[in-house]
Each structure stands twice: as structure tokens, then as C-alpha cells.
Image (cartoon, rainbow, N blue to C red; front, side, top):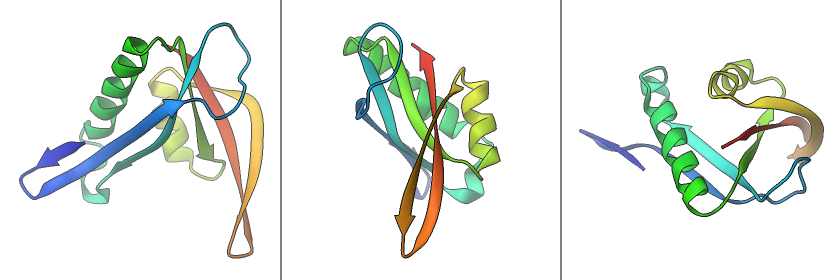
Length: 109
């Protein structure tokens, strides 16, 4: 969790990968990464993601995966700058009758 003058301003949640990903070794997964919208672009997400990577490595994970909405190009660019690459996997989730497509990204830790 990232704390600022006003309290929590961001957090990251991760754990074991919930799906099989190609490649050797055990994979972790970033389940969620949130930063207060008015603070996006100030490095908070990068710090949180870096801490998650460090902790995953410490837990024996060799790779990290995550899912990004296919229309969220800002998040895709963020994760690509952090070394993630789309691996070709996609999944559809339906929320209130609306289908959202997610793309899986992964990287070596």
C-alpha cells in the first residue's frame, strides 16, 4: 500500500498465478494495481509494481502475469514499460450484461 498525506493513495495485490502460463518455473500474478486517479503518472504505480516483483521473487516465483482490459491502452503501455509483453491469451468477462475482453501480459522476474 502506498500512503500519502491524505492516507492510502495506491495498492497492489498479487499471489500465485490463477492460470497456466507458458514457460518454465512458477508464476505469480498481479491481481490488481490501483493508484488514486489524480496521482497517476507520479511513479506510485511503478514503485508498487516493483515492490510486488521483489516480493514475488522472494517467494520463489520466476515470472509474473496479469490481465489488462483490451481497451485500456494506458495500462498496457504502463505494463510494457515495466517489461511485460502480451502473450496472446485473451478472456471475456461479462459484467451487468457487458462483455469486457482482457489480454494477458507476462514477464520474467
